[in-house]
Image 1 (cartoon, rainbow, N blue to C red):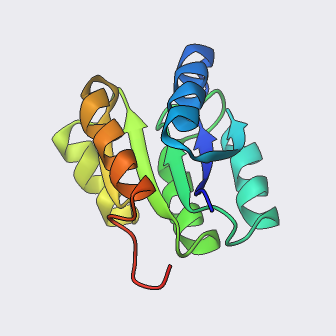
Image 2 (cartoon, rainbow, N blue to C red):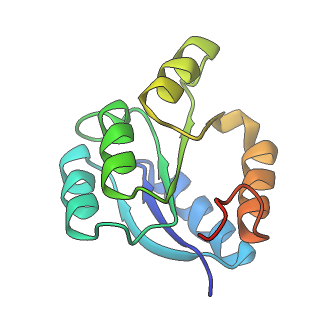
Length: 129
């Protein structure tokens, strides 16, 4: 069974690229949301259904920062990944303190893809998940 991914990203070009990447890696795309409020509703309505939640920090409305803890709470077994142009070392540390499993700058596409490949292959997952 393929892993389900929720993407919270407001850039149409990033949404398209991510959708194509997921297809190639064999993930299921559960949804694409561009606003904090929509993502909050989805996380609550689909409790524990995502295996991976990918968040951008700056959204069409609201902030990905606020969603990290919500994702951790509503999707307790999911990997919460931040993928943002603004993921400086200080911001990455803040994201981890909120509960993010990993933080990537969008310029680190290879590292991000390698992490996803590891998830698809069973690496970086909790035992029994």
